[in-house]
Amino acid sequence: MRRKIVAGNWKMNGTRTDNGVLIEAIVATVTTERTTCVICPPHVYLHDAWRLLRGGAVALGAQNLCGEASGAYTGEVSAAMLKDVGCDYVLVGHSERRTLFAEDSALVARKFAAAQVKGLIPILCVGEHLSDRDAQRTFEVVGTQLDAVLQLCGAKSLAQAVIAYEPVWAIGTGRTATPEQAQAVHAFIRQRVAHEDAKIAAGVPILYGGSVKAGNAQDIFAMPDVDGGLIGGASLKAEEFLAIFAAADRLAA
Image 1 (cartoon, rainbow, N blue to C red):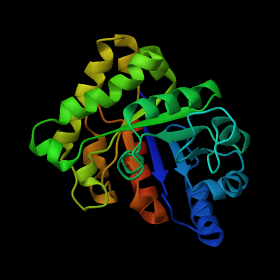
Image 2: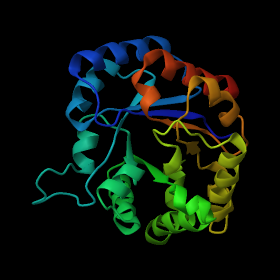
Image 3: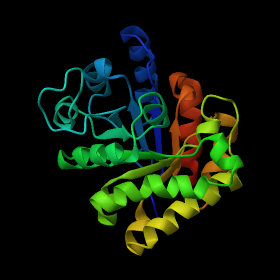
Image 4: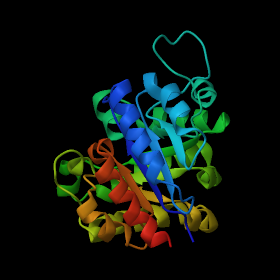
């Protein structure tokens, strides 16, 4: 049985004070190790977050990394640096990085590889824009994004990775894919990986990200190929995030 995972992507939000209150609430509630809980604060707050997490049940993740190991890359942060400040996970290929910062699938694949070299677990984000869905290109777009990693790193790399399907049209818009729409894409992703390695495909966790809330989490997470969520805005509100986590944890029982 695949492990349920709920990861919170704080994006460019937070202060030391606000983060401290939020983390304390999460740490006080998330005591089970049956379901994995991950928080991804901005880079400048990672060390503070690590100290507050105190090695408990909540894991630390970063929102981005450089595809290079070290060198003259002003403003970038390497996988080794993230590992050094306590990260276990890192997002790669988030739709905002792809869209706003022009990260293509080849670069995302290099970042995925760089993360794994230093022992980080990459959360590979894939997903389509509304124009792609309207043109019935969802599987084509998602397949191309996934194939870039499969070609560079191989299917076995997914044994130590997480995939997150995030339909771009459902991020921050209030629109959410129905549980059945999410399931269809998650099943496609798993089948795509199965073409390379059926055992790896059966074990890789695939999260859904796109306006997940306490009110819809249970129905989405109950789908057979949905293994939890990558949570954006709702992860900044302790009560909402913890309710989403609880929904996943109930299904993991």
